Image 1 (cartoon, one colour):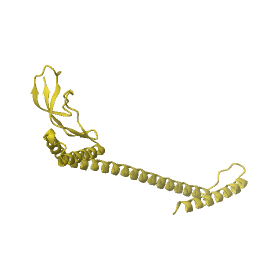
Image 2 (spheres, one colour):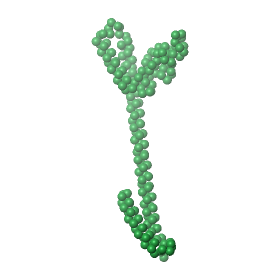
Image 3 (tube, helix red, strand yellow):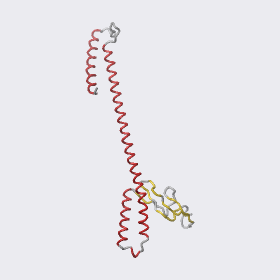
Image 4 (cartoon, helix red, strand yellow):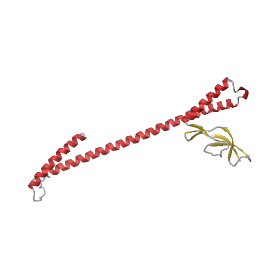
Length: 197
């Protein structure tokens, strides 16, 4: 039964109950309780009241069920969005990890070019492609990890060599062999470094 139909029936029953109460009030003005019929059955008014209570319970039960289902759906939607976001980040990290060796090779290639050949159109083209690649990675949220001159931090740096150097402080990165990168506060690749003292 639809909710509107239930409400209509309740309204009709209320009117009937009020009419009966008014008529019974006239008959039993001495404050007597309504008597049971000869067969021991409850008066009609009590039957209708019980029926009304059952319908109200049913309505409350259905409303509660709807509220629970809406809450479950909202939780499902939030969980799905979170999973999608996590899957996107995992996929992006995989792709970025595979691109980093290409970035390293660009940097090695450009660093090995002699000064007198830097104006060569091929070298200029390589430099422009490298800059475009780095701009794209930055836009995606990829940032290089600062290493040289910074204090050694195992969360960001991978120490592969140790050197004694009086000019540098205790536990300071003296040289970087391979650049490290982060993606949205997550380390994709640790910096490979030489640590002083």
